[in-house]
Length: 115
Length: 115
Image (cartoon, rainbow over all chains, first blue to last red):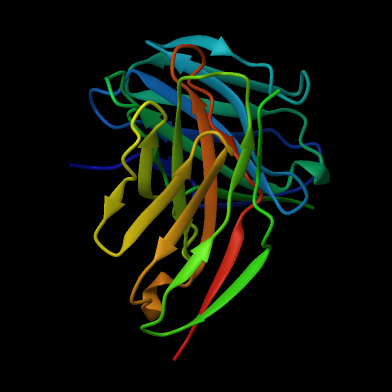
């Protein structure tokens, strides 16, 4: 089975530009998560969806960040305008509800560098 | 708020030896799940092992096992017969059973395996 697919793997852009990160969850999974990883703050949950509906977006830093899940097989995380402090690795993960605490499966991440 | 603490920023072990990575957490919940994830230099987040808090038996996956002490809120990971491929960052994570799907991560422990 294909895992969680993220694109692009690397993104370098200039401050002020719009950045869009993409994620395709594992087929059949009904939860989708966006995480950010930095040296200073570690792994932080930004937002998660259940059945395409945002459930908890309390980790979204500010209005410059937005996430959508138009259907069960695709999600985007957008930053507009981008700033150097947004530089980080962004992970998408998916899981499904089930007894026993189903684990989240992570994509390979997008390394974002804002110059 | 729930917190996860990994007190060892770095650990090292000789190949074929055993190493234990520490993790403590703080929660008022009684039902939850605990996970260990591995992040090699390739950046992938890989599930190593998971534990359900209501199970007293410690989880085991091949060379990986945990020592789960619920009263002490401790969840250590033991790696037996360490291999060079075990070198990675290891993250401990907590998740509520009945509520949010949010994973709370520790800051990680960098494990070096010496030949």
